[in-house]
Amino acid sequence: MASRWLILTIAMILVVSAFYFHPDFLNSFKLPDFFGGTYSSSSPPDLSFKVMVPEAVVARGSVEMVLTVSNDGKSAAENVEVIVESSVFQVETPTFTVNPGESKQVTGRLLASDVREGLYRADFKLRYSSGGMEYFSSGVEKHVYVLPAIRICNVGWKTDLFNPFGRSTISRGDSTTFHFKVENLSEATIYKGIIAKVFMKLKPEGLSVSPSEIEIEGLGPKGISEEYVITVSADANVPPGQYPIRIQLYTADGMLITGTEASVKLTVSS
Image (cartoon, rainbow, N blue to C red; front, side, top):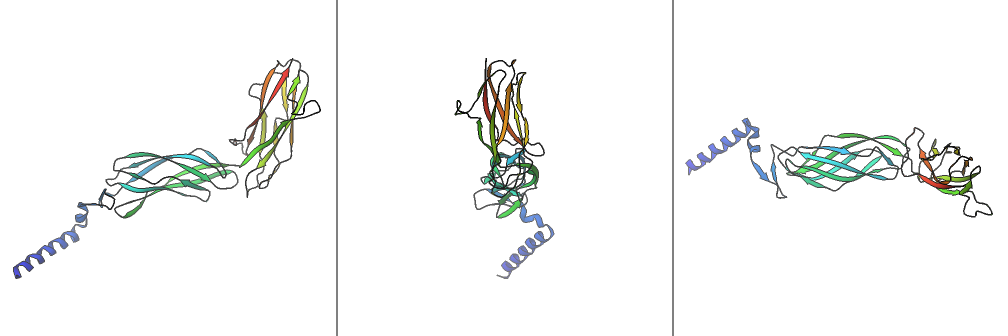
């Protein structure tokens, strides 16, 4: 009996000594985790990733974002989620698993708050777990321009007694007008310095629009601008045909506000 206790005592001393002098002794074992994968405490998951986001998003809107996530560790990264540190942006992505040596592409949405237009920073990270432990990846920094939440509205040609739906057809040597307004869709933001540009992609000599550029008045939340009037003139040399005329909005610093284009179609008769 005494010899048995002596053997057990010596074994315990050897185990404690091995752990004390070699802390990685227990890490050499691979233990099953609660989800059926394999977890190695000496080689946890090691995630790195790249983020692709558009250069601009409209306030109160969202755009698609694409992440490429790689696991260079020897354990599976589970419950992986994308987080963003920002006062302006939020993300919507599914949770997922990345196995050792795997590279996975994941799509999600980047959402912008109701803020003034401008360039804003977003710091992305991955949060994930393995073997009951929580980990965070290194961050990836991106800058995304938030565009104004506005739209062009009430677009139409000048009406008269003979053209109740608008005078969109003129003869050579004649002129007509059309009008439009701009609406602020934001519930909290005032927009100033918005520029409306009026143009034709195919503009024959002798056909003109005036003014071709207008600075829109300041727009309060849910506000609508005054009516802006554009004159279209055709001289005697303009070929008969149909000519699309476009209106496009820009920020004060020259950024195109996507999704705001409006158009009318002019007909020049012989």
